[in-house]
Length: 268
Ligand SMILES: [Ca+2]
Image (cartoon, rainbow, N blue to C red):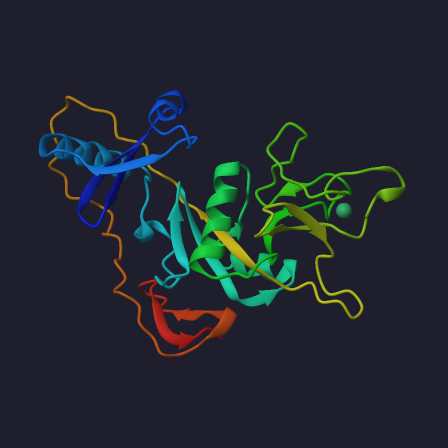
């Protein structure tokens, strides 16, 4: 395994059980970390950087322009994720907040996305143990048919990670009133709840919005001569770095209608 840290590439070799047993009978395995020699180091770094450069096809500049470029906005895969961890909302309000910039509550369709989200929630944003965070899955429209926010039905063969006695179920144990799904940041398991406050119990939680970015496919090579016509479309507006001392809370910042860029003013 290669590790790139503090301008140095390291090679980590995990010694096999058999070899380690011969040299260190008291251990079942050990990690050896050593700087590689210069030629191998250069080759390793080049190889590693090439992998990193192709890991994600989009960058923060591809995310909706109205979202402040701050520590709560990240890119992973082909989606931008906005981690709303400083305010709790019920499911429907969280859903509306994501939709304001044409996003959706984050959909956890793979184990890889689940682990990314939980890792960021805990390690980057400090969500406490056993806290639950809304994800974009509910069976609000039809009992026991859970649907992702993009309209995809969660089938029995799809990836899921339900906690005990949560999710689709039948018989007397059905919980028809629990329609909206959260993820526990400690167990990583999914739980269904009331979607909004019920009697004296509050169902308001942090949430993550997902904004899918259309990745343009590479233009096919062409042998025709380059066009000499002037471009007809105007260049895309590039928003300047956003700084603002105002705290607009969950309602966000206003937009300059002519540029589409955020301005230091709370939205009406
Ligand atoms: Ca239900």
